[in-house]
Length: 229
Image (cartoon, rainbow, N blue to C red):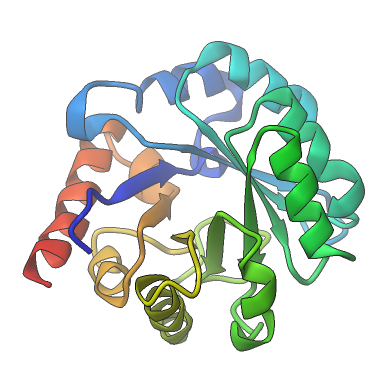
């Protein structure tokens, strides 16, 4: 993995009263600039928590030119996900456990102008969804149970990352391998070694004194592993 690791800070860990400023804090120059802003949309049905929805995403799109990576932890994404793509989100990720027709949904998301992402929970096997993933641009491997920030990293999911990396490297899949959950200075190296391209980090960025510096430090750790391979 010789290319530059992507860092996607999760605003789930940001101050919701100051979201514009919090995103501005990761919009600096060079290594301190986030590649994507990860937006966790939770509906209190698919996951036991309620966060934010389309109106907030529409507002955020007006305040930043960093691409928005919308992770929809919601029921009935076949119906609701397209709105995020139409609003201008760069990447719209749905859960394979929630989508009724994930292949059609990927086509609709792309037609609406977004990249299509598919997320799998820690307990969901990757092998069952390889054919579906041929229609997607991003695979989001959850390294915690979706629904809450601040959980501990589940190392077992790295086997799925390794499998996905092999499938990408051999040309079977063409997608970005993304990981979300418990990513920090200690766990990012394991994830990078397994073959992750894009790292979602919440409290590791927004719990830091300087979020931009935290982005740069995480990127450097991941890149160090990539350079060694």
